[in-house]
Image 1: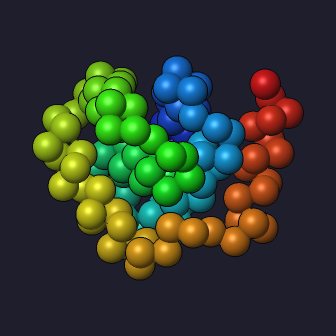
Image 2: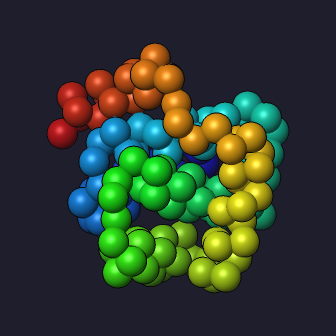
Length: 118
């Protein structure tokens, strides 16, 4: 299910006109959670959604209505409640130890792959 979740993350990000670098950052956050063993059947969609939301907030200068639109899309695509997403966003932030700014060498491989695919 992880590759299909990443595909959903990418598709949703494209629908919301997020930059490939934002998707790349969301992938890195998501993979860090996987490696920490934080994902399970119940929370994997929430994890994916929270990673996209955090990446969008940190790497794009989104306006309030754009954040709302993104949350609407996440809720629709991953079929979870926005209240759960907002609460889980903080859980993910803590799991990532607030380290949302990533070194280039972690983001670049995903970025290259994404830009070559499109």
